Amino acid sequence: MKVVESKVVALREIHETALVHAGARLGKNIVIGPYAIIGENVELGDGCIVGSHVVIDGWTKLGTNNKVYHGASVGVEPQDLKFKGEKSFLFIGDDNTIRENVTISRGTEGGGGETRIGNHNLFMAYSHVAHDCQVGNNIVLANCSALAGHVTVEDRVTIGGLSGIHQFTKIGKMSMLGACTKIVKDVPPFIIVDGNPARVAGINIVGLRRNDILPETRDEIKRAYRILYRSNLSIEQAIEKMEHELQGTAEIDHFIRFLRSAERGICR
Image (tube, rainbow, N blue to C red):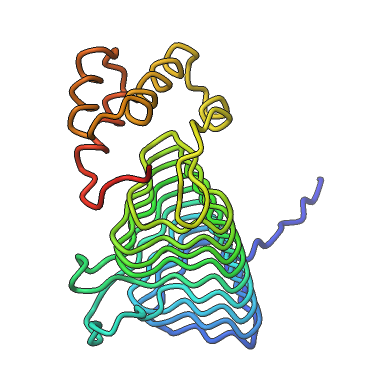
């Protein structure tokens, strides 16, 4: 008779110096490093890894397989003088990487009460996501860059290091911001902006190719770009021209919707 040794798999690996509140909800295969602090109202999904000296507090929920590196502060109180200690939330999806000393604030009453982050994002060291931000999927926020309060970042955006994003601005999908860029107006989808003040530098062709945008669709985006930035038209006139001359692809429709909703104006 063959004897098979059974293996005991630890559901959680929590360092003895970590402070985990009894009310925190922890999934399976959780790792929590030395001196980490997990608050009472925190929920960590399966497979999350929390490094040393990390603080996760407030009404904060992380999905599965997120990795938080040492020194990060996640779900902390907003850096907003209007915040009076009200109950507010931070929701983070799956498979995000939050590197060293990143700070992510939960929401405020004035911004709807929640900060929300999607899936597969990379937040590099010392980057900051402020209160009430709405961040999509597959985004790179490079070192020391910061999103101010109420910023919206759509999917597959790359934000260069040391960039600053003004409150209430929107960053369109598959756009790219160069390092040290200052953003005070909305950035339309699919383009590159750079500098202080930010200036449009062209179409994010590399990003479009990496995201498998078809050649014919890329051609339509180029036409939309020329209409908006090379025809001396107002935004309203450019939208009208696009609607009459361009094919109704999903990307062009999104581009037009973004322009219609640009309350702060757009980068030029």
